[in-house]
Image 1 (cartoon, helix red, strand yellow):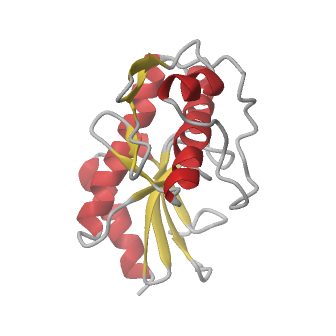
Image 2 (image 1 turned 90 degrees about the vertical axis):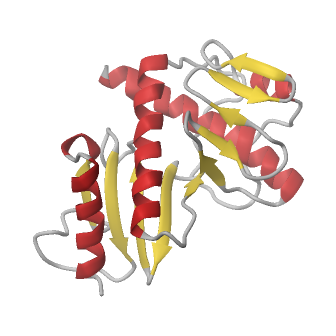
Amino acid sequence: MAADLATTRRCLHAIAEQVMAGPQHRRSNEIALRITNEGFATVAEPGLELTATVLVSTAGEFALDGASCACLAAAVGVDVGAPRDLYHDLTGVPADEILTVTPSAARELLEALRRGDAALRRLEPTQTPILWPEHFDVGITADEVNYGVSPGDGYLDEPYVYVGPWKPRVGEFWNAPFGAARPLRELPDDALDDFLAHGRELTR
């Protein structure tokens, strides 16, 4: 299952970057994506939404598994490619690579992002969490502290929540190079809220 998660995460990240955020930036000058009940979507034109199994547009629904970013982009009528000249830490997934998206793994990853979005809205009700295509995490920034949930990356290969103050902190809570992090599987929703709130208190 861990292999399915890593492979599926890489593919979802590539679609977010090359089929959704990149075309959105070229058409609407916006790279932010938003979390939905079933996955994530663009915030401006072109209007696209991804679920665990399909990419949805006005042209129809197109299966993720077995497609490529180039094929998906052509199907929904956009030019494939990451946002240009904005960041350099790209996924590196070739546009014509056939993607392997396991629905159960995709649902787990997307549920982690949905939980993160909900927790961040409870932490800071005045803010709208953003799914960033560069690091593929949903987050907010308040008082020079980044809060968010990642579906996993080079730091931790599973979904996790983090608190990342701009100025380094010391103490037992701060267990990551960028601040503090905990695997999401260890935290039910109330504990997730407590972790974020505790991080906020420690940075005030």
